[in-house]
Image (tube, rainbow, N blue to C red; front, side, top):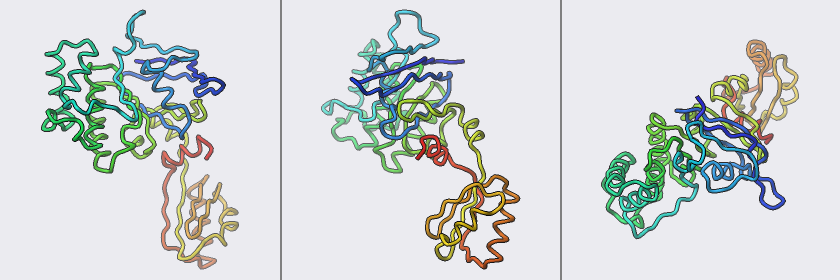
Length: 302
C-alpha cells in the first residue's frame, strides 16, 4: 500500500527548472534509494517532500493524511549537512526537537534516552555536541529525525561524510529503522544502496529515468559480462574481441577488458577459442553481471 504519492512535481528557480514533473510513489514499510549525479534534483526533491521547499507545481499526498493536516507530522528529515546547537548536550537537543514536534517534555525526554541508546550514544548523551565526532553527529541527526515516530524518514546523503566504520554503523542503524518505518534516502555510495534498499529511483537532469523495486530493475538491466585482465595491454586485440560471436560490446583500458555478452555460452566459447588460437596471455578471466553502478551509468548516459 502506498504511503506517499507524488504527482507531476516540479520546482523552478528563476529560469532554471531543477525538478521536471516527476511522479512516483513510496510504499509503506519500504526502504527507497534516490540516486542521481550532482545537480540531478535529488536534494530539491527531498526538500519539497519534507515541506522545506514549496513546489512550483504538482502534488505530494500522504494516503493517511487528512485534509489540512501538517505534512511535517508524518516526516522525519536529516539534511545532508545537519546543524546543531553545540552548547547543548545530545539529550538536551533531542528533547528540544521533541518539544518542537509538540511532544510533552517528559515524553520527549523518555524518547530521547531511548533513541540515544539505539544509535549508540547512550554514554555521550549528556556531553556537549561540540565534542562529538562526525559519526556521532550523524547518528544524533538520525535520532532527531526519529523523535516524533514519523511515518517516513528522509535522509539526504546520510553516509557521505563518514569513514568506513561510521558508514557501516549508519547502515546498520538504517537496517534496524526500516523494520518499523519507511525510509527514503539519497546516496552516492551505490553498494550501500544495493545492500539495503527495497526500491530504487534514479534521477537525471530533474527527471526520474529509472523506477521500480531493486529486483525488478536489476532483472530488467541484467546482462552477463566477462572481464579479462591480460599479462600486457589487450588494446591491440580490441577489434578481434568485438568481432566475436555472442559479444555485444567491448570496453578496453590497457590490460583490462570488459565484454558485454548477448549469449554467455556462445560468447565464452568464442572468446576462449580466440585466446587459445592467438596465445593471448591472460592473468584473470571473470564472468559476472552488470552491477548497480553499471546500471546507474547507463541510466544517466555517462
